[in-house]
Length: 137
Ligand SMILES: [Zn+2]
Image (cartoon, rainbow, N blue to C red; front, side, top):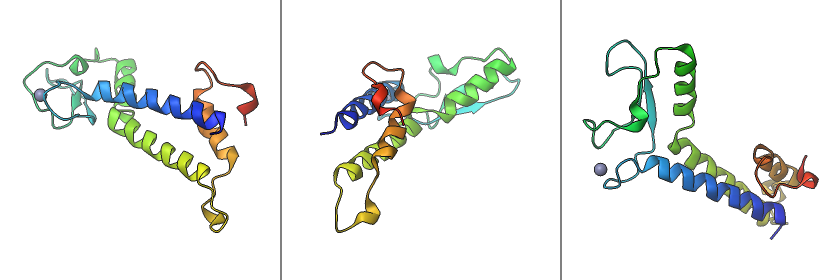
């Protein structure tokens, strides 16, 4: 296996592990991986919520107020856009790209994924240990 493909696969594994831990909010229910942000002035507003929370009465660490600041608001909006459900979908999509790259079929060149795509997929992970300058597109 290509070294870049192997290394990128490890980064995706780490992303998946972190997302699964974040989505495992109670341990007694299936993963609740989708988060939403509720803004407003009521005590139950200004919070990141687990969508379809299996224990809505329990106070969750991610359900803290955001101090009614724009900074907090923008951070909360960013966090819910990168919730575990999205990360897991992205990991799956990237794995499928890696599989398509490795399973190059000369009879179906239109399905081929060029090496440059793999290099671009790896670029956001350049700060992680093991990234090689020769992989930089
Ligand atoms: Zn539960």
